[in-house]
Structure formats: structure tokens, C-alpha cells
Length: 88
Image 1 (spheres, one colour):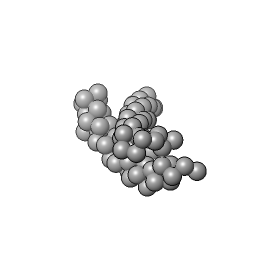
Image 2 (cartoon, rainbow, N blue to C red):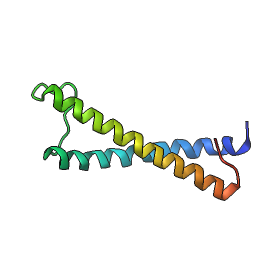
Image 3 (cartoon, rainbow, N blue to C red):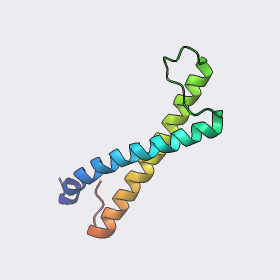
Image 4 (cartoon, helix red, strand yellow):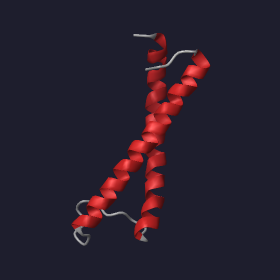
């Protein structure tokens, strides 16, 4: 295993945690704009419709995936600019 990949492991874990926090905040704001409701429904919210629950889950998943990709790619690019090696 390349040294840059080993060194990047803890950085990648930290970036993962940060991306989760960012994605949660982005989703919360997005849901407020889309649904004009401050809280997104959970799958077990009895008073919410199937469509609303599925829409919230879909939007949340898309946001989490996009933010994770942006943060991971930025971290890898930064690592390459600092070390000269791509961590993947």
C-alpha cells in the first residue's frame, strides 16, 4: 500500500465526519425551502404520507452523496497538491 494512501486514511475519516455534518445542514435548509416545513419526515412518522417520506429520503440521499463526493474529491486533490501523489 502506498504511503500517501496510509497517511490519507485518518484524513479521509475526518472528512467523512465533516461531510456528514455539512450534508445534514444543507438537507435541513433544502427541506425547509421545498416543503415549507422545518422538519423532514421520518419513515415512522404516522401523520406523513408515503410520498412525502419517500421524497424526503430521496432528497436527503442525493444531498449526502453529492456533499460526500465534493468533500472526498477536494480532500484527494488537496493531498495531491501537498504531496504530489493521489491518495486513491
